[in-house]
View 1 (cartoon, rainbow, N blue to C red):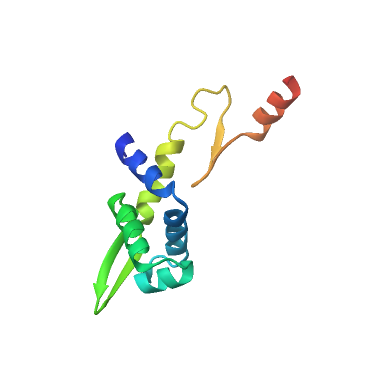
View 2 (tube, rainbow, N blue to C red):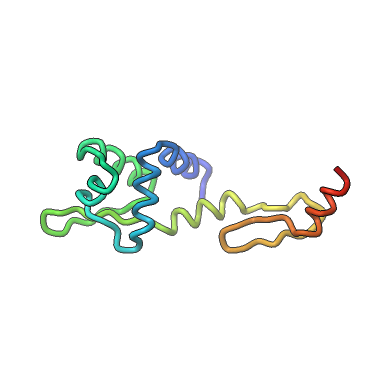
Length: 120
């Protein structure tokens, strides 16, 4: 993932309504929701929601698919996984100890943390 793409994603999520839309879509992954259901659940006007969905789509965080007269939006989970990977790519690379890196978290090892607390 390139820095420009990361900034686009972070910018898209740095707005309360867009973050709420994305979090709602994650709850309904992988199928997503119809735009009308999103608007109803979040109390957003259709025009406002359309604007926010366009921004999320531009950032590569959601996809849309028309089915009859409804448009369904679904999260692109790979985009978020790539973002998390980018942010934690060099986790603990400059520390003396090893890190315990989970699939979605980066935490210093407990022994290293205890050592830092004792010396503080």
